[in-house]
Length: 267
Image (tube, rainbow, N blue to C red; front, side, top):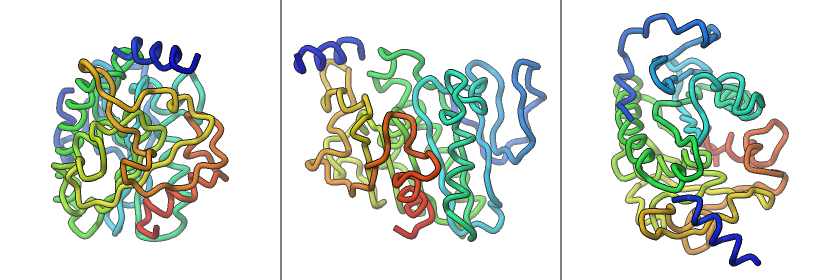
């Protein structure tokens, strides 16, 4: 039975640049997108949309955490959440993370700078992750140039972890921590295969459906060894009270506390 489920999942699983960080603000968004006030490093309403919203003060930050979301995210649900569920909103998650980090010289960026998969089949391939990785490398490079005093942590949820994995070898040394959660794989067999000097962290809740996704790559499908597998070699953080795929950054959870420590450079 379990074998059949795994095979079924494997069968189903069969971007443009984010632009420069300091580019002029985008023109006013279409009326269908209600952009809240705030600080934005990126806003482009074309296609699925691109957005990077800042929580905290980058000008004084010694630590910057960049949150990379996964499939089904787009500009129109960036604030209201996928399926209208607020806890699935990258903006909400970034705000909760920044609050959990407590007072200090840090900031969080919710970065939706790539075209995300909208179907399970798309999510099983690395095409969009590869384009997203290129955009992320450019974004982080601009970030380190603009704010050279800060070190950076990258946090990737679900397919966002694959984006980070494919970007890892090209990231600057100012990226000191990479944390992934609910990850289907990072496009590598182990931490060494990421070719990064950053410390790599991973977490997966017992109730997360991603545990059924095979940790392999076959005929262009799949993303390799799961980061929470012992053989991968990542440091594991607490996820005991995460009940599903979408609550790793929920207030009050052990996982949010752990990710706040990693994001803040205190882990």
